[in-house]
Image (tube, rainbow, N blue to C red; front, side, top):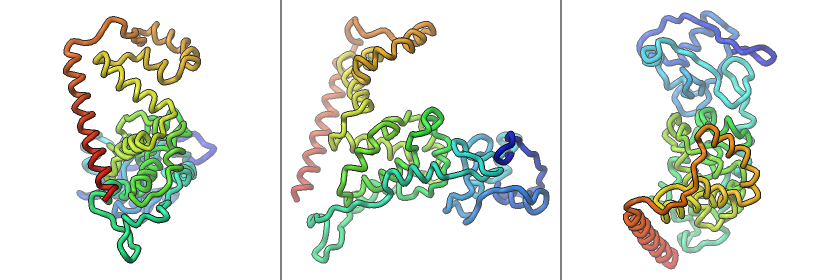
Length: 321
């Protein structure tokens, strides 16, 4: 890739490699033998530090973890590019300032409860059960490589979106039983936060450490609703969707818009609605009853509510102990 001030371009290299050679090995070989100006980041070579994340044949991956021959056999070439959604400094080196700024915004540290004797032993040490630790175990494995950030479809449309890495880090602390404040959860429930995620699953697909950022975001959404942080379009959309399926057995997308955005903001969406209608993309409101078998749908809802009530009772009993 070209440096700042120049049009980006691809540079081809022919490299003799053997079985087991990683992309990072190949980059070192190019730098040592063909092009000393080639720039890229690397450190541990063990898929721990995350420094060597790049796009390989269009997919964000760790160069130290990806072998050349399987990539070549699959794509008939190996195209290495810088991560998307981050400015290029030179070649494969990108500017992570925006990434780290968003990590900083979620306050990446624990805000512990000041006094909770039920969670501490007689010496004042926290008692963390296995099931509580497992809640945030995946999120703790994030190495901040930027692969999820690079693959995020929401990031393409909204540069202010916090992104999967920052939100995963938020769950690491919000999901911790020692966390004592809800301010952080309120902040990430606002615009550009947890409800902006399009749930495309790309972040989970490309994560080299199986962190599952989408699951972390879903956990944050659930926690926000439990804490009563519901005054936002995201929660209104979820509630409208749940009610629509409960009552009719299908999504009444036109009516959901009014419940999600409110009347005045929905009026402002009319020009977009007309364009959608011209392309056959505008669903008609559900005016004529429900689907066949709506009773079965309602039974599902009833069973879910019973299960939720049971879980609430168990949690309440646990808290009382």
